[in-house]
Image 1: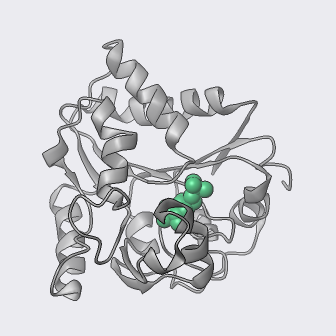
Image 2: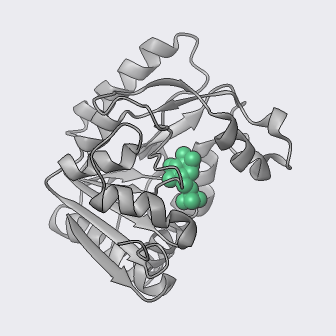
Length: 242
Ligand code: GLP
C-alpha cells in the first residue's frame, strides 16, 4: 500500500489523475472504476483539464460505477448514474454508453447483480478503481459488517447513511431510498489498482483503520490491506491519525 500525504486538494487531484492517466496512457481501452461522492471530485476535475488540453483521451475507455440507489426513476438527479454524468462524464470524452452502473430499477434484483458482475468480467475486469471512504469506514455502500468477500448485491442503507445523504434529497430523509445495489468488497478487490482518496479530519479515524488497523468487517476499508496494488491519497487532516 502506497500512502501519499499532500498539502491541498489541487495536489490530491494531480496525484489521483496521474494514477488514472498512467493506465489510460499505457492502454487507451482501459476499464475505469468510478466512485461518486465528494472525495474523487478533484481527480475528476484534473482529468477533465487534461482531456481539455488534449494530454489525455478517455474516448476508448469503458467505466463501471460502484453502486446505485434502488428505485429512483430514470434520470432522477440523485441517481448515481446522473451524478457521475454531471460530475465527470459530461466534462470528458468518455462515451456515455460506455459507462455502466448497477440497475437500480431491475425487477429481478438478484439477476441484475449477477449480470453486473458478469459485465465487469466480460470487459476484462477493472484496471483502475477510484474509491472514497465513509467516516465509518464504508467503501461504496459496503457498510460496517459487510462480508470482506462480498459480491454485487442489494443492501439496506443504514439510518446514518440515509441521514447523511438526506442533504442531496432536499433534507428529506424519507426521500432517500432504503436500498441500494453495491459492488461487494470482493468485487472491488478484483480491480487491478485501487486508488482511494480521503480528505478532511472527519475521515481520519477511517483512514487510520484502513492503513494501520486490523483487517475487519467492522471497518470495510481495512480490506484494502489484502490488495497488492493500492494507492491512498490523503490531505494532512485525513492523515492526522497515522
Ligand atoms: C457514499 C458513497 C461512497 C462514498 C462515501 C463518502 O456513501 N456510496 O462511495 O465513498 O459516501 O463520500 P464523500 O466522498 O462525499 O465523503
